Length: 397
Image 1: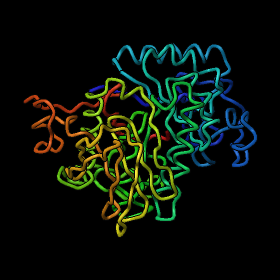
Image 2: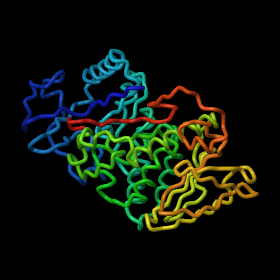
Image 3: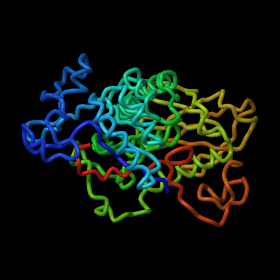
Image 4: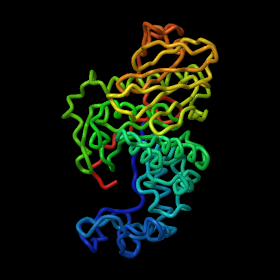
C-alpha cells in the first residue's frame, strides 16, 4: 500500500472575523495573511488575483488567506512539506485549493515534497487547469469530472462532451492525462447517486475512472451505494454500511481494478499509452486502450445499446470476453466488434488470453497463464492499478 497525505497551504480556519491571528501556528501575525476580502462569485471568471489573495469561507467561519508571496512563509512551507514527507515516508501529496495560490509558488513546493503531487484545481476548463500540471505532477481531473457527471446523470446527457474534454486534456496537460486523478465522487461534490438512481447509469459512470489514461480515484462509500448530496451530506460514516463486500458496486469496482491490472500485465505500455475514442456519440462511447476496449452508454437501464466498432484493432476472429459478465464474443474477420448490450450496462472487453486461469476475473473463461496462488490487493498511487483516496476529512479542505 502506498500512502498519500492531504495538505492545505492556502489558508487557516478561523472561528471569528477578524480572526485571532495569535492563535494560529506557525503563522501567528496578521501580516502573515492577505488583507481581508471575501472572494466573490464573479471573481472566478475575471479576477485571478482576487481568487489567489482574497479569502474563502464566510463571516461565521472565514478561511484566513496566507500570504504566500512572503519569502519567509514560502521557505517555511517548503521546509515543512519536505520534513512531513520524510518523517512519515508519505508516497504522495494531495494539495487542497491549489488555484487559490499563485502558480509560481508550486514548483519549489513540489520539488521540496519530492514525491507525486496532485492538486485540486476546481474548474471545468482544461486550459485553466493545464498550467498547474506544469508545476505539480498532475491535477485532479475536474474538467473530465464535470463532463462525466452531466453525461451520465440522465439519459439526455451528451457523452461526446466527455470525449472532447479528454482529448483536450491529452493535448494541453503537461503529461497528457496519464498522471491526472480521475474521479466520479469526492468530499466536495454531491455523490453521483444523489443525482440518479439508475444503476446502469451508475455502473457506466463508475467504469470511466478505471478505463481512462489517468489514476483512478475511488471515494469511500461510493462502492457501498451512498447517496449523500452536497457537503456535509456526502461525508457519511463508512461503518454505517456494514462494510458489505458482496454488494453489486463493490464487485463492480473489484472487477474493474483487476481488469485494469490484467490489461497492464499484457501491455507494458498500458499506463503510458493514450486512449482513443473509436465511437463518440451523444449516447455511446467505444474507448480503446489496448488490449482493453470499453463500451459505455447513457441510454439507461431499460435500453439495449448497440456498439459497432469496425476498427477495434483485434486480430481476426480473436476471442474476447466482457469481464463484467464473463460473456465471450469474437472479433470479426477484420478485428472489429459489433455488440448488442442489455439493460444499459457497460462492457469492458479483454482478450481471454489476457486473463489468468484461476485468477480473480472470469477464471473459468480465461486462457492466459495460471494465476499465482498468492492473493493481494494493490493500492497504488502511480503506475499501477488504483489510487484510493479515503477523504475522511472533517477539516475544510
